[in-house]
Amino acid sequence: MARAWNSSGHERHTVLLIAKRVLAATLSWWIAYDFLNATSPAFAPFSAVLIMNVTLQKSVWQTLRYIAAVVVGVAVQAAIGFSAGPDLFAFVVVAAIALSLGQWTALGEQRSQVATAAFFAFSTYSAAATNADRALQLGQIILLVLIGCGIGLVVNLCIAPPLRYRSAEQGLRVLAAEIEYLLDDMAEGLSSGDVDADRAEQWRKAGERVQDAVGQARTGLSTAENSVPFNPRRLLPAHRGYLSFDRFRQALGAMERAVYQLASLTRSLGRWSETEDTYTYGPALEAYADFAASLRDIVHVLVELDSDTLSEQAKEMCGLATTAQEALEKVLEAAQEHKLPLADASRPYGVLIVEATRLMEEFQNTCDVLQDTADA
Image 1 (cartoon, rainbow, N blue to C red):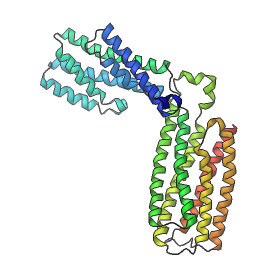
Image 2 (image 1 turned 120 degrees about the horizontal axis):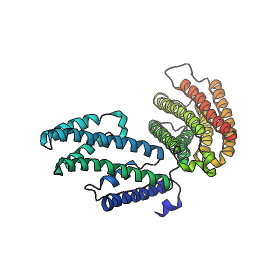
Image 3 (image 1 turned 30 degrees about the vertical axis):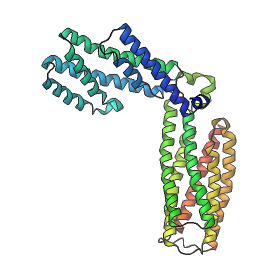
Image 4 (image 1 turned 45 degrees about the vertical axis):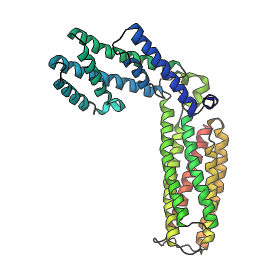
């Protein structure tokens, strides 16, 4: 708890979301049970908790879809119940129709709530004595859902509405950290000549972790973008400079392409460890190690990415990119000087050189994007 209070990261957001859900559920139960004396008051707090998400935009969409799913489910039960009665055959028909309608993709994540609402409605309908009472109870279910959803939205809107623009930065930092680890280990291995099968397999697995981090970074960017619509905090002067995410989207695109090049590079190094039994081209690989280390230095700046100091960080990255360009030139010179068999498709050297050039392009692109947007 102390960690969550002192940190502005995931822990604090999680604790805050839990607290808001508790408040929304409590208010919903209080209204449903004490004021309305509802037969099934749990529908209200359940709805309040279900629709409350980390962003207001997602909460609004989930609310609309959830209400639609509940209305459809209750309507199915009402149509079958009032025409066939609350018997086993009617339940089978309700289940079949509700589960079929639950495949409706327009309801998104709330599709399963069609059947849930229909089953609860069937239970409530069966317990009522008269048709008038049954109609009242079915209408009450929808009312409780509306109350719960409304309270959930109001609580989420009025109490520290989540503005997660830092999620975009965090996603890029996590991705950069994984890339940095891989490049650092590659630089060390190539420099020492330790490129055996085990080391190559280690790089391949690290490359897979990097690709997983790309997905996390995209999720972070999506969360940041979705936290802005409907959020009143976006109007505050303190937040206005953080609401554009084009720089992060472009930088992530370049880094994602670099990740694909790294994956190809690790496969090529794996081939090298399997097919090469000579260190004749050691000097060229040492130059490659220096190049990998220069890319690592660029990524290290991204590990500490911060919008407040982006201008200085972008300048530092561009300076390091110049150093990396020089390291790449040395790789090309070493390849020519030591006559690497670049044209031999059965050996990995040609691919290594091509991937080095492409990697440099994407890293330079990342630096340029951040530099241009920081100066804008």
